[in-house]
Length: 219
Length: 334
Image 1 (cartoon, each protein chain N blue to C red):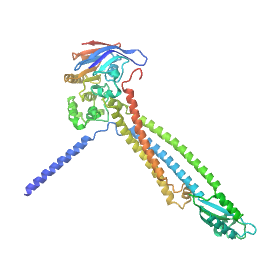
Image 2 (cartoon, each protein chain N blue to C red; image 1 turned 90 degrees about the vertical axis):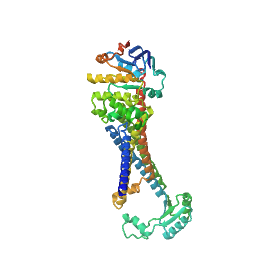
Image 3 (cartoon, rainbow over the protein chains, first blue to last red; image 1 turned 135 degrees about the vertical axis):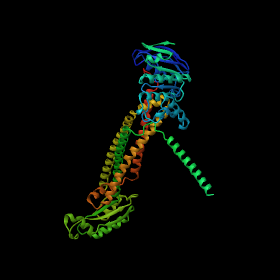
Image 4 (cartoon, each protein chain N blue to C red; image 1 turned 90 degrees about the horizontal axis):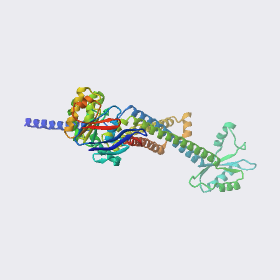
């Protein structure tokens, strides 16, 4: 599904922040991406959701070599990748329902086609009572779940989550983790970038540990 | 029987109510919040700036149109008329000389009418200098023949002048050419200055529209990014912003354009209703009826369309540039 071969990344003329990354992410797999702050987790995630090009090496995502992708192809591939941002990136002028439905709306789908699915998913993440609330009145945990629901609404092949439990208390973090596990069981590959060891200890899962710009994999 | 009718009526009204409720529900569901927020501080500020700039540009355009039309009017009014002056001389019968000049002129092709300025009118002309009760027979006063010419095919002035001097040596032709050329030069200079000011105002408008739109767009960058990362096509994102900013541009520009037209109409009305007063007479003397005409209206319409179109286009280009900046940036090239 995702393949990195000797991938390196540097900004401007500085030193390489990521070096010789070689790993694969398999369909329906579940893994944590971890490492100390500044290790390059967010840069790696940005390469995974096609927001950043590597300076060397080969990245294949969903069977496509990203170095040969045309700009017009990127949205079609991104639609198969769900992303949960650390800062949620919900649109404040839209309701929870509209934020979650946004990926379907931008694909030109009619609301009648997706309304039931969106409402069901919002209920599944536990926000059934906050359907029409704007993000400004949601708590951190609620925003996080709304962002997760938005990433999942179009059944992506792979879900990337950047510090999804960074802004929530431990009970809610466990609940969010259960959501990801349930999603993984339904067939979506999941990559969670976190430095929360307590969270990782709750699940027996593969770990990609970034340190000094290199990745070490613990299966 | 009555019960059956009543029960049918009830069922029908229930069905109608159900259908109406369903329609209303569907309409409510169909009304989604626009992806680009319809109103915010930056949007309102942009509309105000667009309104002010369109108002100023429309005023400048209207003023240039007015000056240009008025200059053409002056030129045409003066060149429509020429005068012949007959100077008094020893032994010359002034009445006979004037009659001779009038006959000669009327026989010239391109002349529409020729009238001798009568004693009373000549007296009125000289009244400020010589006072009332003037007897023109006692004074050697030159007399005038006013000639209206056909503007489309004017007479041959040099031939007319030669014929005139041969027939009545005391007559001299004044075709106002010196005045006309001065007025034409002044009118052209005025219009050229007006056009220069208009081009400056238009340049300022274009730059203001571009920078104000880009300023308003800066606050929407997070929306562009979110849409981008949820898989929206660039054309969809650009279209959403273009539509939103076209609407803002149209509202702002229409407000400014209509404001300028209303101001012209109000001044025109004021001059029309105060025609006897010296102030209005002065304005009428300078600008005629103070109407900007179809050229003015068409110009304001083009200005409004240009400002709105430019706003939409700038927003589209800004989105495209923002997308290019966040799309697969190479950390080296970026």
